Amino acid sequence: MPKTMIAGHLLHPMLNKAPATLIPLGLGLDLLHRATGDARYADAAFYSLAGGLAGGIAAGLAGARDYDTIPEDTQAKSDATKHGMLNAAAMAATAANLVKRRATPHHAPASLALSILGAVAVLGAARLGKRMLGDPGMPVDVIKPPAGALPNEERFDHSVLDVDQYVATAADGQHPVHT
Image 1 (cartoon, rainbow, N blue to C red):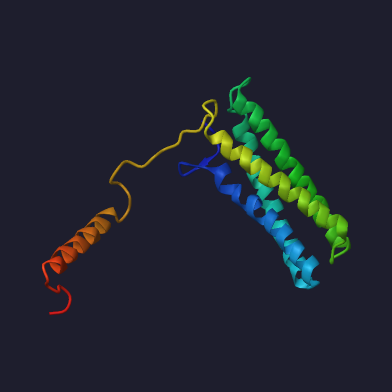
Image 2: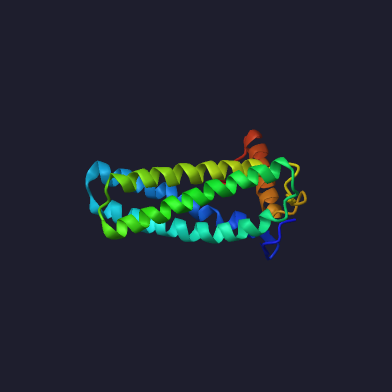
């Protein structure tokens, strides 16, 4: 079982949303800057990439700790190694991109190439990470809530019953709402 948990929830899956979202968003903002020439898109891309890098470092630390719990010589370990390497490449490209942007705020073509590299790497790593969750060698327990245990489910059931009552009444030619 992975070691990094908070309040019974796995930490790595909670943290990996930031880089998986913010780094591709940075690329999208770079493309908008390129298409429009509006410097605000380049500024927004910088902050998006910085947030993605910070989130990626945090997710990487949690993922590295979980990596040690995966049994050796399994497909899950091989996939986790590739997943980690792709994420490391994405973080390196993003860090280099941010350093380059500090020197040249309205980026050059090289920073656009680094944005593309970072986005492709982080999305590829996310795909591998998702695939690993279904791997029998991956020590992650998927917990499903018991039937009938969802919040407000009782209220929903009553709403459905109320609708059935109105439909049945209307079918008899009566108008339950307006008399």
